[in-house]
Image 1: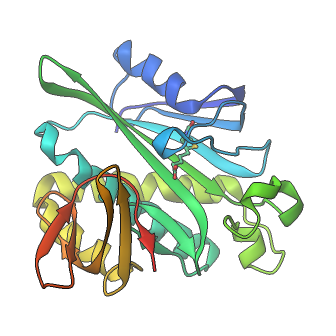
Image 2 (image 1 turned 45 degrees about the vertical axis):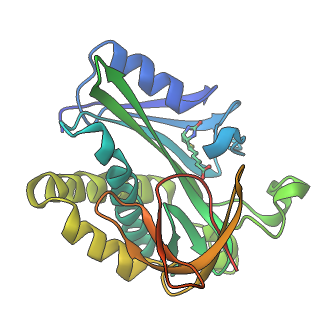
Length: 246
Ligand code: BTN
């Protein structure tokens, strides 16, 4: 990776900053990390709570030559890399909820937002945004997150985690798994994802404008979509959106 790490104090969103750098030709691996985001973004248009000095709020520029259809694979790859880093540095036993939320028990500890930019129907670059709630205490959460979100500090009974060590580990794991993925393809990465998954073997639900669908999560398809078996035994592939573990 030839990219620099840009350390910022306060920023709207590291995603926007990384996008700006990518648009200006920043090489793969260019990383933006901030102490605080005032407009942190989550998936599905949600806000991402990013208080000063308490978490890892970072975005990494990737420039894979992949068909557009394969970008969901990158989402899962990033989840595996971050999961490895968190387990290794903090000892907290996080698992992955499809596609790439990291949970401790049933509370979310880390979210990943992968955004792609296309040029003339080809993938130009991707920005992998990673938000890890590291040293937030219960009182650092706005009320609406209580009971839904957790942090490494909370899961470790009040013991904090060194954010620079963890950020370094995330970048190392991401760099090496990304290289492995480009060399060996998605299939071995999918096996790693399955081993860390808390989704497979569970009954899950998905709400769409067409209605609610429930099924047993049985595996991944070739693009990283989730395979659900409904009550009649029919298999459906879910390629985007949010699922609920039931
Ligand atoms: C999710 O909804 O689970 C994804 C959350 C992604 C948050 C990270 S924090 C760094 C980067 N900058 C943002 O504004 N969002 C991502």
